[in-house]
Length: 87
Image 1: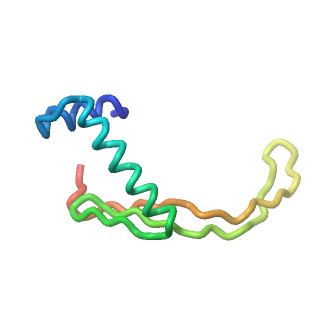
Image 2 (image 1 turned 180 degrees about the vertical axis):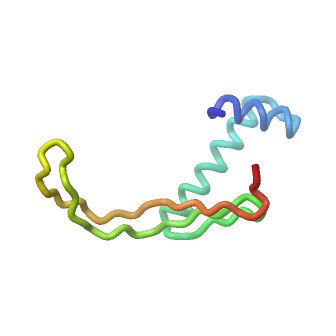
């Protein structure tokens, strides 16, 4: 499912126009992005939780040459599925 298909599903499920559903989706993803950027954890009961984790610097290898390279430390987003999210 891509973004336009998700907007269609939100619009039909909530009885909104596609434009309103797209704005709601953009506002939701923007709010999640803002919270994660400030270091907060976002928990959606029954769906899952998003959190930010710090990945340490490490040494890697260039697969073509085998030369060692330094990979910088960075923050990464993690998602943990909730118990209600079953397929």
